[in-house]
Image (cartoon, rainbow, N blue to C red):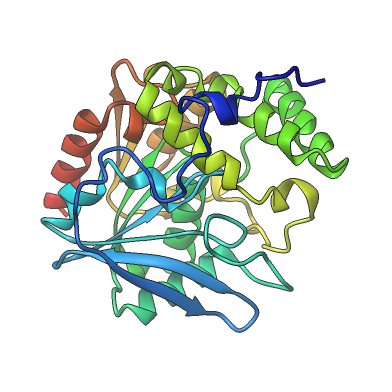
Length: 293
C-alpha cells in the first residue's frame, strides 16, 4: 500500500502538480506543430529548425518532451521533429489496428521529410530499427540509444518488474503502476539529478497506462529484428549509458556486433536516460554521427 506523501510522482518536483509543458533545457526554440489525422487516431508532433530532417522517437511511458535537452541545439542545424506515439503524451489512444512504424512513416510523408535521420532511445530505438528494416530508403542514419530490441530474451528480473506494473494497471491501480515504473532501477541514475527527476515524474504521471492494460494491436516484425540485424546496413551509432541495466548492455553489444555498419560508444556516468542525464556527451556524439552521414 502506498503510504501518505510517498508518491514519487508528486515529490520529485517539490510536491506540486507537474506542469505538462515543463521540461529541462527546452530553451526558447520556436516550434511549430499540430496533429496528424491517421483515420483511427491522431499523432501530436512538433517541428523546429531547417535542414536535413531528424526524427526523435521517445521511450516507453514517456513522451516527446524527453528530447528537451536536444531540441534547441539540433534545431539550430537540422529540421528537428518529435512526436508522441499512440497512447503517449498528447496523441490519442490506440483504436483498432495500427503500427507505430506506419504512423512514423506517415508523419515523415506529411512533413515531406524522407529520408530522415532517426534518433531513438529505448523503445524508440526498437521502432527506429523496425523502420530501418521495413523502409531502408527512408532512413539516412540511425542513432540507437540504450535501445530495446525485438527478439531479445529479457531477464527474469526485468519480466518480474514488468508483470508488477502490468498487474497493478490491470487491477485499476494506475497510480501504483506509474510509481513502480518511476521507481524502476532503470531510472535510478536519472533520479539523482533533480531537474531530470522532475521531468521524468511529469511524463510518467501523464502516461495513459494503456499499454499495461490492453493488448497492443501494433504487430511486431516477423522474423524479429534481432534475427535480421546483418541485413540493416544503414550507418548506425549505438549509444549505451555506462550504468544502464544488464539487459540493455547486452542489447547494445548484440546490435553493434550484428549490424555491418554500426559503431558502439559508451556514455560515461550515465544510466538508461543518457540523453537527459549526460546531454553534452550525447549531443556531441550524435551531432558528429549526423554530420558524417
